[in-house]
Length: 294
Length: 302
Image (cartoon, rainbow over all chains, first blue to last red; front, side, top):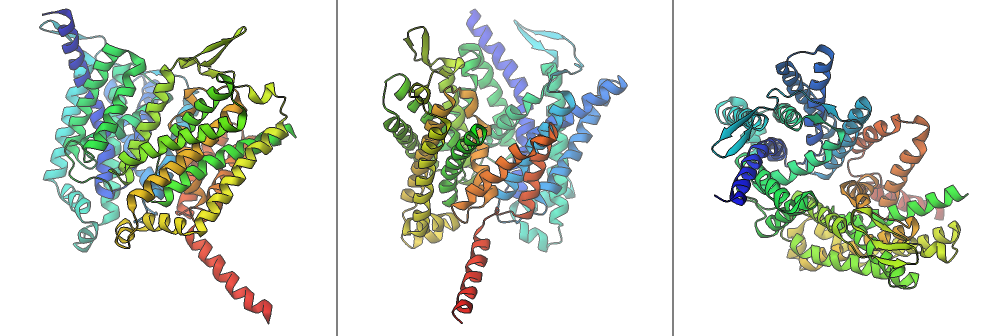
């Protein structure tokens, strides 16, 4: 096999594994949209702030990585609830622009709190896998990316169980299909919305901690790319579709690593956006979505 | 005085940018492409005066026209996607424009200096105002001529059939098309007008700043463009102006708070949207004012 093929396959592998974190962020955007038909622009920064809280506890206690992780997840869930309370709960139901704007305000606020607390400097994040590498035939499998992928897979499995095997999941699906009918059946709309924000917040916390440990540090500068990549993933997969977000996240990871390899950093994001634009024009429903435009 | 004049000039750019998003929002579309049009206007007009040696007014108008052309072009594919999908499609447009300028190299040498877009280094040497010895007062009044012209044009449009058509499309597309309104024409022309105004704003900004870089034209600028009309309200052209005042007073008025200002900024947006979800000057407020006016008039006569 030629070196080129080897390298290309290596990049597909890396991209596929790293894409699992995009998938998690995309799931967060897509689930909130699926239930409320509203965009939560503060989701990416929720994930980041959760990871930062975990990191803060790590620096306070020098505790094990598991503790960092747990705190990140819980904190992000809590921040998710705060976002729901401040930006969505009291808004008119039929005017999606008001919560869009409010969550943008929240994005600025949380971003600023993080920059303030860290003085804008990147901070090292603990890496549970260290520099571990596995040989897979002629290719290298990075331990941290493998860890990221396995955890993401577990989260996706857990979400599937939650959505399709629990009463809360049933209520969530009912609300996303017909909010008024669901309410008439005695489902508490606000409770379901709050639960979705907590759950997606926790998923975001996991994604934030995974990205932190794979990249090796956290920086306030991550909030915008996280938001944009999450939105791109959610739209590519079809807003509201969880399997779509997963597929799109993995695809986005592969596309990014390949363009990075062939064209360099200056063109990486450009190709992502061109892909997105092409998708929106020619297949507006996304990979698995059926409806275009809301 | 200098400080207030340059503040006034900055208000002008922000109002134009807010108005460009406002006309698109009237048709029920939310576009994050305004920052892309602004960038295109800035680079085009900058190249016109600095590289091709054009006079200022044609250069500014060229910036607007090229922005409008791109608005027209983005308007067509944007017809296929609505609502929140459009937000993201137009975000992609803004980012693509930014990446193109990041990679664009087109420079000439004038004596010792290199002028023109130089990739990541940005576009230096848009010095028309300074070569011609314009004072801050000149620059502010030149900018405000454009701002007032656009405000007046939008105000007239709002009172005309065109404004009613745009609002009808924004309220309910199905109802609008069933009374014979051409949705394609309404949406694409709103995008083209929005692109033109954003291009003008960018062209004026480039000459004021003398240096532009793709970094300035990102998602943040696009977010502010839609934030002005959304926070200020879309009830009338004064809405985006109110939005600009709200944000500018926050940014420049809370300076005494130092670092805490930025924290408060986000909180105030959230509070604002909870208190007035449809913006400061919304349709409801205008209706109440109109009713007050009607009640007051007969009283005066008696």
